[in-house]
Image 1: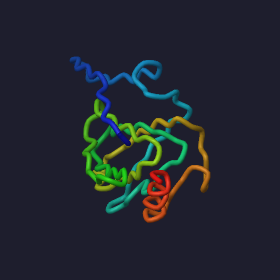
Image 2: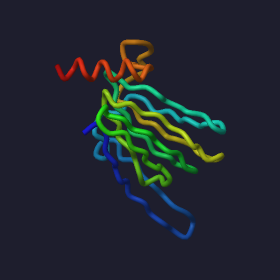
Image 3: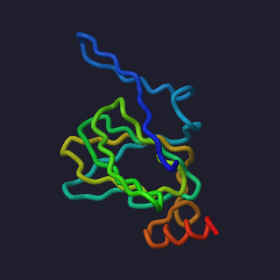
Length: 136
């Protein structure tokens, strides 16, 4: 499967809430990079697949819709709580849209930043072509 949902613990206290991310036990890979993403109104972020990199996405504030396409199934997944993580594996098209005004997407990556064609497929038709090539 090209993606999976990860559920993180969530603690409610009189002073507020706490969602811990245990990087040694809760993650399917060793985390090399952490970054945040926000989106302007009507923005689409991501819109690519990775050749090498896996990522976990958690919307820690607000909400955002992830569009996940593995070449066979395309689905929308709402990320709207800091306990819900989306693990996107290699060769899975992913994009994020419908950011609420207060949305902050926290992203955990299995690699340091790898720019360009060594890691990114930014054309969806090229992504489908590479999937077909892998199957043959």
